[in-house]
Image (cartoon, rainbow, N blue to C red; front, side):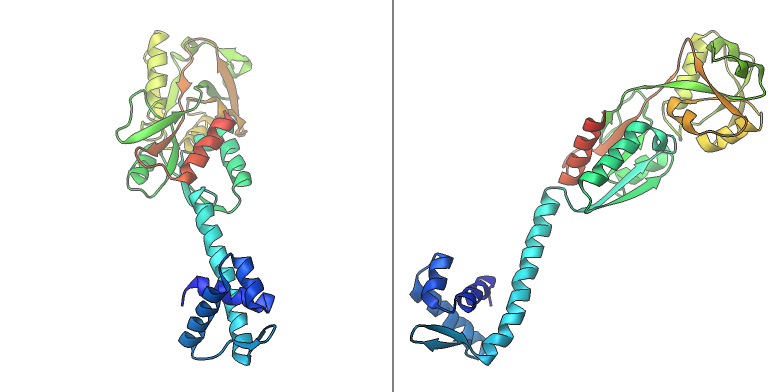
Length: 294
């Protein structure tokens, strides 16, 4: 039984006339009558009473009508679902992001705008450090990731770079440097710094180290924090000063003051990374939404 046979049946059932149904379907009346006879033969039951001026459903026809309407409706839903998926308007999109990227306004704006524009897409968010995100992206467990890249290109990945973000100093509020609205980077030469390993962000550690050296000093490392959130806790405990992306300053933690750096300012890079090669419609829509949020 083919779907077109069911559509032919429904046309005759609705028009109650083979000639009008044929005109509606854009086919001749004899071929339509033959298709209905073929369907009746396959079902082993008559569907219509042929009348001098029309057609009426038999008892079998009335029973078949209910299921036939359901089949056609299901076929239409399936068609629409496939079309939505082809346009990137349905399906599952797995996005990874680092802890610091989650606070960047462009990242949150991109995800919010995508959710509003494509409400039938299921979004799965995964927060990991940069190395963990790269591993899952390459294993195709994630579709795209927001990460802190270094200057080097990443093999097999395409980076959609966001604007660089200045970094600021997170200082214990009781520290003398917290009384100033801004500080020179050289003012941290004798201060213990809380640094973040490359696993958190490929650029963060090297940017801070490079900026300190440009300012004329080698940083004194107090702690290596596994996450920016834990690093801020160490700052609040007065174990050192951390240099973090500016967007992190929106995290208002008791005991921490964020201060602008006036010279040799380290920058935090951010990018959306996708695998090179085939780009599904879901990803194209995400990238388009990201570009609109810049």
